[in-house]
Amino acid sequence: MDNILNRPFYNKFAYAFDSIITAPVPQRCDFIEDILSKHGIHSGSSILDAESGTGNYAIELAKRGYNVTGVDISPELIQIAIKKATSSENLVFKQENLLELVGSHKYSAILCRGVLNDFIYYNDRKDIFMVFFRLLLQDGVLIFDVRDWDLTLIRKKENPIFRKTVTIENRTLTFQSISKLNVAQHIIEVHEVHAIDEESQEYKFRMRCWTKKRS
Image 1 (cartoon, rainbow, N blue to C red):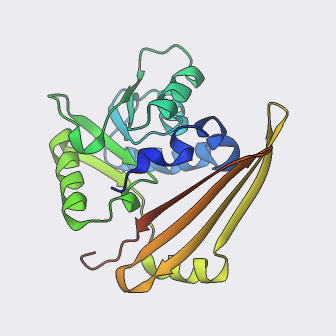
Image 2 (tube, one colour; image 1 turned 90 degrees about the vertical axis):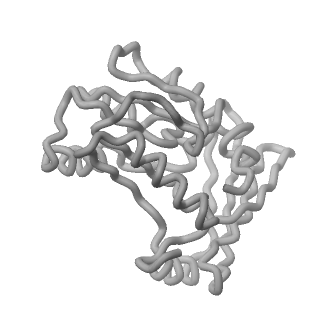
């Protein structure tokens, strides 16, 4: 991965993540739970939420009775997740690097959302799936999402700019993300700006989309 920990969303502006990036978590967990159920994985089973961010999916799945471990490379995001989670014996958050995950515990399922595009090199992509293989039980299930290149090409050409303004603790934060497409390498070059009052912070990073062929 690029040095993703430098991304302001994952450190200085981690507190604003849930206000800027919103998602219908309960509905998506309905979908996840349906997949797990079809594979014989039910309440009480162990789930690893790989790169759990601010913990929304891990918290929701724990409420449904799964034993969930959430890991994320960002200590700031993990601290937010811990604060949001109610005291629960079936939910734990840890600050970990996915590529360095080790241990004897194996999981019935692994959930990995919104991170695999940050692995832009083939060896890293291969390594992360080897980590998943080591951590899954023999009949375990891996649920992950990625940006499909063909769909991303259409969407980002039509609307390359995302902008949102929110008020947090009586301060106005404006977030802007501009995406440029590197067609030859299936890479999105992202320029983000967080601006609050007179202060702003910019960050540039890359994501690599996936295709059905080796990418």
